[in-house]
Every structure is written in structure tokens, then in C-alpha cells.
Length: 310
Image 1 (cartoon, rainbow, N blue to C red):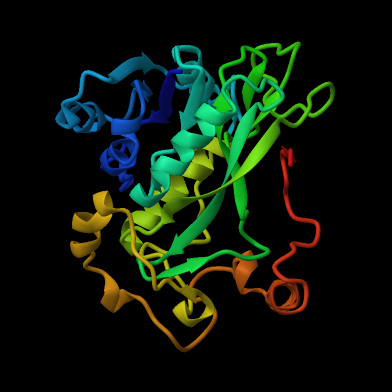
Image 2 (image 1 turned 90 degrees about the vertical axis):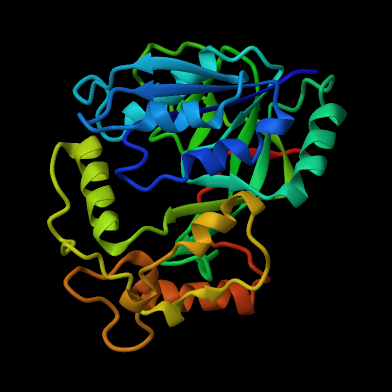
């Protein structure tokens, strides 16, 4: 059995992606790690970051992004597919540049891959998500944030990244750039793992968070997210859950270097110089409370792009 890791990337340092930590979190447990490295800004040092990992397992594919051909975030899916197509493993372990695996979960992940290697009913594995917010001590896991997602898939040509690369679908008649299509696609049959994705996509210095949001908007619609001020306001941190467990060891140095705690706040307005985000709106805060306190964590109408096989 062979396992390939894969991801896509560009402007890693500028946008504060913990890409080295992400790759290193699984590098010892995969046979190769494929990176679709897009051409970034003039001062993009993503290649140097990848080279600094100094591993023969890393395979870099140089790519160009085409936001006209792949609009509305689908270039992310296209880049994901480019990396996937270069993988040679039986199982393909996908991590985005801000996602990290805890070392405590690695053995159970590998055991599941071995257990279901010959069971071709199983096309993927679903992970639990922790969405960190503002710093490394606060997170969300509620109605407004996807709680689970596919991060390991079987190496099948009909399996493609879907929409903006959040998930995967089986598309037998894939036409090349129809990543948003639902017709004649189906969800993958998956096993739910008791393993976690530590998602750090919303842990950046406030000024970098503004830059990141602008980059995302440009990739979706060629516009800037003017709603956000130069220093992004994370809002009231007391709206978050407090994280009291351990982070992946590969993240400890980055966590130690966090230097914007004084820019986070725990009182005052819900949001300053921006519109309320979904998790800050009373409607969804009430809905989250009902789900967590009365429904045992069941998410009403939550996004679920997979079929769980028992």
C-alpha cells in the first residue's frame, strides 16, 4: 500500500500559510508529497520554503493560475486536481496549506488506510475539523463552520476536487472545468475517522488577514474585500470556544512566535469596521446553542458532501 500526500500553493509567506508545518505533519507517513506550485507574486518565496524541508519525497509541479477559465474559486479545485493527477499512491492524503495533522492521530489514520485498502466500497475518509480563530487558543466547531470533510481519497481518475476545493466528488464525465457542477456527480462513500484537521486559516496577524481576504476575493470575483479594514477585526474572542488540548508538535514554534495578542479583544461591539460574519449573527448563535445543548451536536441542514459507510 502506498500513500501520497498532495496540496496546492502560492504566496505562502505573504499570506502566512504554515505550509512547512502542514507538509511535515504527515511527511514521515506518506511515500511522496506532491505540490502544485502556482506562479505567485514577484517576491513569492514558496519554492524556497518547500526546498527548505529538504526531503526527496516532495515532488513539485510548477503551474499557472487562470482565474478567467476557472472563476468563483474553482482555480483552487483545478490546482488540487493537477496535484492529484501527479500522485502515484493507492490513497491520496490531501491537506490545504493551512491544515495540519496532530501526531497523535497518525497511527489510526494509517491503520484505517490498511484496513480498507482492499475494500473498494470505500472511496475516502472523513476527518473532524477544528477551525482556529484569531490565535491558537480559540476555535469554532459549530453550525457556521463545517465540522467534517473528506481529506483522504482513493486514487481514482473519476474523483475530482469539487467547487472551491473544500471537498471531492465522483464525476465520471468530467469536462475539464465544471467544478461547480452537481448534475451527474455523486458523493463519495467514506469512513468517518476519529482524527482531526487543525485548520489555521483564520490565524494570521490582523494586517495579513486583510491581505488574505483580498486575495481570496480576487480569486473568486477579481475584486477586493473592501468591507475589511487594514487591520482585520477578529471580533469578540469570547464568542469562540477555548482550546484546552495540545496542538501538533510541528506548530509549536509558530505558536510561540504569535505577536498580535494585544490586537485581539474580548468585549465591545460584535464587529468593528466590517459587517458581522455568519457566526456573529444572533440567528446563528441561537441555532448553534440549540444544536449543541438540545440536539447533541447534530447540525440542522449542515453541509455534508459525503456518504458515511458504517
